[in-house]
Image 1: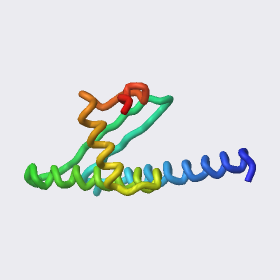
Image 2: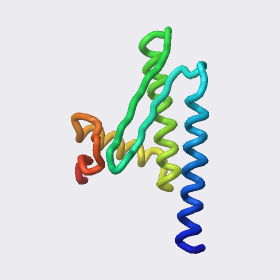
Image 3: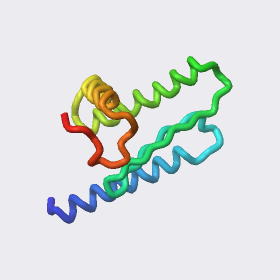
Length: 108
């Protein structure tokens, strides 16, 4: 496959997933959402949830979203979710705030 065809396939896959994300965000029945976006190396993220539940249930919902993201990243990277979770926990312990730019991620 040529580089042009490969790039077109990657663009098509990206557009398909972007459309799926938009579909997921469309609707009144959403209870919680965590979105992360990277533009020109800049990372932006947000989390919100609606709940009448107690703090434990709200925390579990946030943790379930995190676990889903860990599984997606693991699948993309071709590694086990535990590896991604460990690396993410290490990175979270090394930064005082979520990096706004990929250049702000500490070296190992």
